[in-house]
Length: 243
Image (cartoon, rainbow, N blue to C red; front, side, top):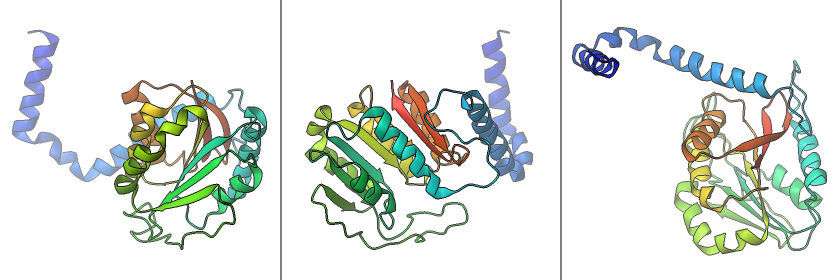
């Protein structure tokens, strides 16, 4: 019997006998071990990379220090020297998009914020469905616009109207959607428009079963190389450049 034939026989036997379902109560534990080990391996492969910012390892995170990464990206890539297209997924009260509006002042830059503004569409960790709801932020900057609704309902319509302008500007994508489903959906829809030099930030990158898992599946399935360029809060906030 060949190796492939043996594999087929074993798989069919396990399907027929349901033998592995003895371990079903441990599914979540195995899922955690597998995915957290993938995250741990990734972090330790990249912790000594030549990053613009990197505070690994720190015992206590300071969320606001992600702004060190924001500033480093602006300065290193000259994001004030030409217009950018900033896309933020997960706006909440608007703290980060307001920061970018204030610090990226080029008149040709455009900023779009996507959010349900009605809270999470599904549970995330200790947060329940509907948590994190917020009113649409008020900004006094005509370069900014907000798109309300779940990404699966709104983003493709946005692309059909605006994607033709993407080649003329560097894309700066801020993934703050928290959820695996939302993050993977957005990345997969953006794939045809990504070009060398575009930037992608993940705001909860080291959450092993959400943004990190979406990043891993996206890059594996689309054969896309993303170079890590900045990290804060033990890779909780991590930025990449499209190669």
